[in-house]
Length: 363
Image (cartoon, rainbow, N blue to C red; front, side, top):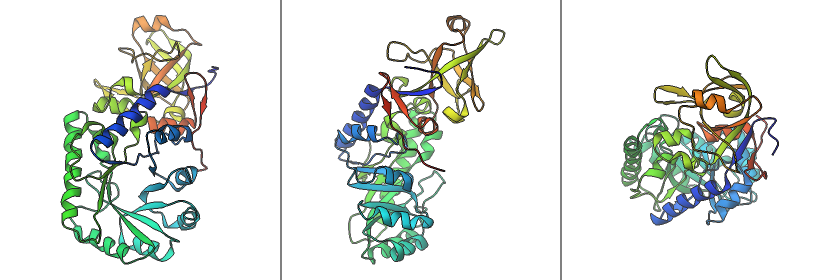
């Protein structure tokens, strides 16, 4: 495989094992599995998910919904609806069942008037991520939207949806489980205070919580996404081991600095994004692995991507590793945030050299 530029490798076996793990976990708890596709954004990976019975998916943009249009029975757009995309939504509704997310009454009324229908509606609940969503301590605001949806023949109430994204800021299994448990309780307790004509579906979505928790009491469905690839952040959270990370950026070494014992790679922010994580007191933009034999190694002890600019990355290495590599060799970088790295790169290659698609859109 020619590696004159950075390329994103995907280990098909690891990815499929991650999919099997989360599918079996959902089944063991009686949960409807509606995985989020924002991580992989790939029709080929989508087929791997179909093979374990997935027919309901979650996306983060209208473009993504269009990319997977007609391939699944149910698509949820898990971001508060952008009213300027009503024509785009109505076009999709011609041949795809869609559910959208709302967190205010005015958007709900807008959809009641303008959506072609039929259209599913999730009410987003903020269980602590402090992004979008309604406060679970204010059930009257949620009830108002429920009443609006149930009084409109075009709209169908899907349930309450929460993404406890603040688990990504945790740095221990205990902290992740505490956040996830609070989110679960918030949804269950809120549901008891609401009046509906049908039983509300409660959905939780973050990968760390879904990976680690064994308590889903009262929850009907989950929509994790990052589990297909995992990444360095997930391994630091203890949501996975580094052996579960399914993508790796293969980058050529373009310079060596003997005084600083550093390797400079062709691979920077436009390839990996600038997401970072603190590991053992060091700001880290990725972990170094060795490539060879159609696989990559475990992270090399004492070696990490210490800085990145637009095209460059600087790897701090041990004396022993410094002597093992020359300019022109290729090393691998496990990404801090696989979703962003995949989006930056726009495609993957399997370890046998097969190209794997990734959605590309004009921004």
